Image 1: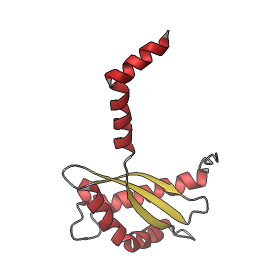
Image 2: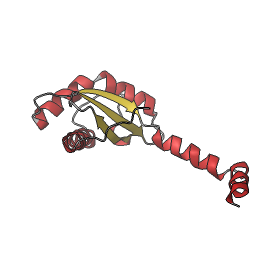
Image 3: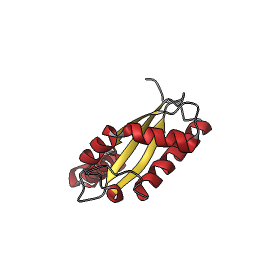
Amino acid sequence: MRSKKAPSERQLKVANEIKRVLGMMLIHNDLFIAGLKASYVMITDVDISPDLSFARIFIRAIEPVDSEEQVELLQAHKGVFRKEIGHKMMLRIVPDLDFVVDTRLDNAQHIDELLSSPKVKADIEKYKE
């Protein structure tokens, strides 16, 4: 099994700056995109490739807004976001953006529910001895 290499300091800095720039664009509602509920959208994380040419932006919408719908809108207008990132960050290579729904919190909650179930607790107690 191949292990994923930890991101470099440069990757982390660029990812954090992309997150900041996109977050500010959403907070200040710099772009008018019909249907986008910018005040209900959170950028939870940014993963960037080692060569800084690709960035995956994890998005989570606050209820009652649908995360999938918001991601589709962001994805459809990613060129505008990419242009703004290039302008504000002055990067030699502006990464291609890919907006995705962040399901990690849902997965963690599901695992927590599984671990809290009586059947699993009984198995844990059985093997504690």
